[in-house]
Image (cartoon, rainbow, N blue to C red; front, side):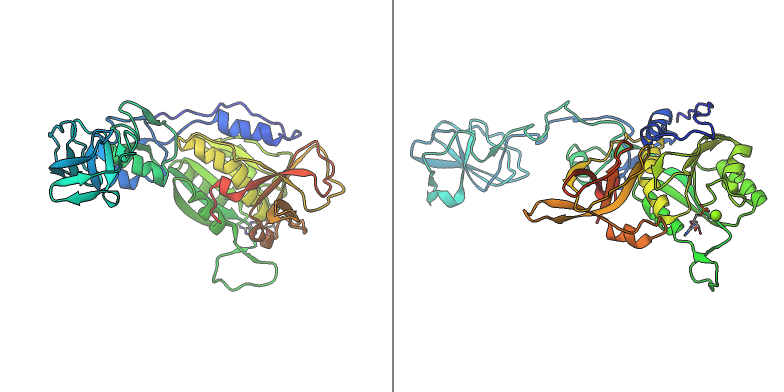
Length: 418
Ligand code: AMP
Ligand code: MG
């Protein structure tokens, strides 16, 4: 396992704000994999990051074989042929057909030597041990060639790619007994705030149930993570400091929400400054301005704003890329789809990037149009639920008129299924 300490340079003074692009670049280029590797049986590796390149050890399929139930022969057929052998799937075929001979053959059965074409049984006429096949079949019809799926020695999957269900099929088709993958990122998640309550607790004025922890855990589960739930920490400087110091010894990442601003009751940032190094505090992004990033020893600290919408958006934009890189994955930017806006926003503050909660609906011509959740509050979870993606408005934009193209980033590009 290679553990590389982050650079100990501070990327930001308290006076500046990093742009979205700078923030993402720090999180994806300055970090590197911290997880170890393990060899697991194939069925346990779905969703993991590969830790070694996969090269096809042999041809798939291994042998030329029939794609249908029928009769194999050497094209072109000239008329009725004697059926001289029967070959089923799983048989070892050592038979050699002479020109003008046919083999009874079944789907997946190895082609006999001398044959290159198979006629489907539905198209054949059999009379005793003689078969008449269609005369217009092209050479190679209904026959699968050895290596036509993957040829031996082809690079198939690269280190740091994520194993998807279809990759499982490919790896299984090579007959590999074990796959070397990255271990999950050990991530500890906590919420911070005196006002926060666990579900089931009696609520009174001034209190809110903690909604971020359940959401952030679910988001972390979209990546290979081993999650420790640290619960809710009150606004108590000593307790926060002691907890973070302790947890940092046994985790790759600490993810917090709340207490991330510079209020008197925001102790998380102070704790990071005391225990380790803070690399980043504020970003010129809405929602999400007080997004922080630092380290306590070798443990990466990612601090999200307390407002649920800001915590959600910052997870997708920054925590997800960081967890990808730390976990040994290669980070891919989500695809941005240019879509006409179905709304007007007459003024937008320049100099910051905004991510609006949006969804697509068919417009008058049937093509998709982006719609925006109209209420702005970053505590409104209902807007997150109505949305199916984010509308990205870059720093230079100062207004959006109906019909102008905006970038739409579906949540599916961030690993959230709808
Ligand atoms: P803070 O970042 O601590 O200043 O919190 C900003 C806002 O988010 C406040 O209204 C908090 O009550 C709210 N908040 C913080 N953490 C949570 C949470 N875990 N669940 C729901 N709301 C939260
Ligand atoms: Mg707070």
